Every structure is written in structure tokens, then in C-alpha cells.
Image (cartoon, rainbow, N blue to C red):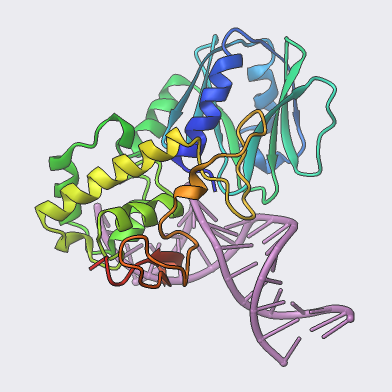
Length: 272
DNA sequence: CTAGGTGCCTGATTGC
DNA sequence: TGCAATCAGGCACCTA
């Protein structure tokens, strides 16, 4: 499941080729992948050139010379892949953007949860306003501690709330809580100042490290960058999908529970 | 405002 | 062995 580090890896690949390229054609193979009026999607894009490739939380934000933005969310199984212009659409290809340099950008998404849309500046600002702070730009301790204080919910599902902090998903929420030695079931409003500091530092460190390893390629999700290359961070996971294996710190058994409807992995001995 | 539940999807896994 | 039921997951949307 692409989270911040995987999306960042994809965006860095896109930033290498997209700026300056012009979209010469758009093909939509699954209508629901496109949010908004479907008949307006292609016309808003064809003839437009990319000005930038950026990320906001787990959203890919591609700037256009029209002032609009092409946004893409990979959700669970979405993948962006640069292909030669003639490459056939695969069985899971939902959208193809044809470029003016003999390449095409394919949006493959087996489970059809991924989304794309064209947003005007105001709509982009609205999306931006709904999302919490960017963990790689330094998390503001005071504001987040204040928000934690008012939340009577387990800390793990709160980390998955994109309005609290943007970019965390199931993998890195579990890894950050492990790195901070905090029990995922702890209620957010019971964390003391020291624990909040440990947690936010862990969130920053875990994500920055995973970006350095170009994301996590694990199991059935099989994350790939735009060139089809896998990440390396799966070799550096401490708890995620390591149920029954040894905790790297104490050697105890990693446990798996369900929390807020999601599988959660942790070391009951190290995380209290 | 917060907290909790459901639907969207389909390949892999589990249960009988 | 074979088939049906369940699971996995992020997020929009709904209710209380």
C-alpha cells in the first residue's frame, strides 16, 4: 500500500521526466477512477504541459501550465508506470496519459480504489487545507500535542487519520509506534509530553529512512516506482507483518491484533 | 466537534 | 480436492 515514502519515490521519478512534457492524449478505461465530470477530464488535460511534480500527503500533485493540477491517489494497489507510447494497456490499466516524447504514463490499479482528478487552484487549496502537516517538513510539537490532548481514541488509528498527520498508512504507523516504544492501544489523550516527543520524532525518522530506501515493496501490494523498480525498506521493518517473529530489541514475539478495523503489529514487551 | 460503522474492489487465503 | 466465504486495505460518506 503506497504511503508517504512510496508516493515520494514515485513523485521523484515523475519529476525527472514530466516537467516540460505535453499531454497529447488521455484514455480512461475505468470511469470511476476519475473523480468529477468524466467528460471534462480529457479536455482539461490534452494540450497542457506539466510544470512540476510534487506530493501532498499521499496525493501526487502534477502542476499544469493551465494553472490546474492533475492529482492522483494510488490508494491500495495503484501504480504509475512510464511506458513506450505503443505499449498496450494491461488488464488492470485504468487511465493512460500519452505524452509528446513517445512515452505514456499508465495508471494500473487492480482493486480500483485509486483516484485521479483535475483540480483548479481553489480546489487544490481545499484539499491541502483538509490534510494534516507534512512529516518531512518538521512536525510542530505544540500544535500536535494540543490536538492529541482532545482525542479519546487509540493512538494507532489516529496516526492513520490524514487530517492529523498526512502520509502515514498501516506500515509506517506500526513502525513509528514501535520505534517510539508506545503501545498502539494507548488512548491519544493519555500520552505525556515525553511520549509525544518520542512519537513525533519516530514518525519523522521512520518516514525519512523509508524514503531513503525508496519505499517498501511487500507481499501482494508489490510497490514499484515509475521505472518498475522495487523498494528496499522491507528489509528494515521491525514489526509490520512480522507476527510471531522475534522483536529486534528484546527477542520477544511480535503480536498482531485488530485496532480500529486494521491489523496492527507490535511488541507487547517493548511497547507499553 | 468526535467516534464508530459501512461500502467500494478483487486476488489470495482460509474453512468446510 | 474443490468451491464458497472471508480477508486485506485507504478513504469517502453516513449516523449518533
